[in-house]
Length: 409
Picture 1 (spheres, rainbow, N blue to C red):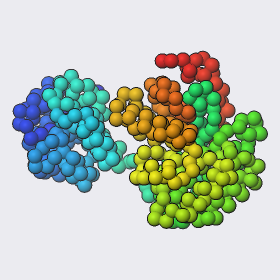
Picture 2 (picture 1 turned 45 degrees about the vertical axis):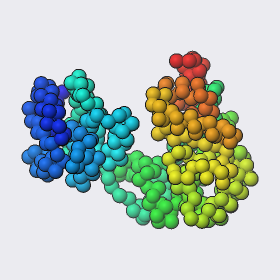
Picture 3 (picture 1 turned 90 degrees about the vertical axis):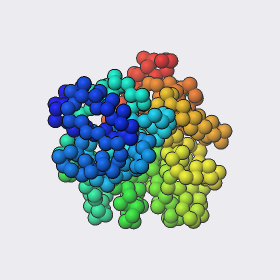
């Protein structure tokens, strides 16, 4: 347990009774350094002073002058390094929306308290809390990589493909993999694609990157095929790849050269990027690839802006429900409604459905009960390097045989 006497806590709430009540609750738990403010402006003055800057803020969402949401934005401007607990009389959906916003701002949030505040709930949240020290914050790797470093990484094979399995929900059979590229940086270690894909797109390196990933994945698919493992291999395609008609020939040539059937290749297009102003070239490339029996998958469905028109215009045959609508959909009515609607629409359009972000047994059971086709996520397996795959398959088949997968929970 951390030394509570050194911990600085700030309560921001326009209700003075609430300030007294929360202060008393915290004092009872041994927290002696508790400040309180009944408005955001005074609170920000305390945050600006190194001696009074808190480790933890209990923040009321609904205040008349500066509300909690606006206050969070000022915390971001000040690069606040502490943690946050939201306190509110608003309903669950409102609190969850506020929580998403706080996470989007990258401020660690411990949880939220409903008014009237239950002292046990406050105690439970704070007991789990490990105060963030400034050192830890500053050590996080925020390094920005440039195009030159990425170009070097591609040409010197510092990029490595990982493969995340997709399995049949009905039978547990391993149906395919999604190829996920990682950068094994010689100094900084493992770097995830969200740190370098944007750089590739902004610096005309995306075709080189995709060619590398595709070539490597096809080589691996061939090795698996020769060992008797016939998998459908999915590769992520950027909209920038679809800007030039040469891309279609590149894909066809690489697959032919690898001696693989187009029916075993899935091109996953992220919906949030789909279709800029001129839709003709991407539409032509995707349609021609589909004619050649490649599979087309719409990725992260529901997170972009024009989902329905994409489904209308492009001959996708697989839809991936984004993990944000899958994990915990069994417990959350809003997520469940979006999950059900996506699944139902895809089925009506004759598409195969992959649920991403299947993290635990409850997620898996929801997929089974609703008749989803394929599952992908840590409940099945984390992304694996190619040489880990054969061991994983043995373990997975064992889980299936032991009824872990197919028995009802």
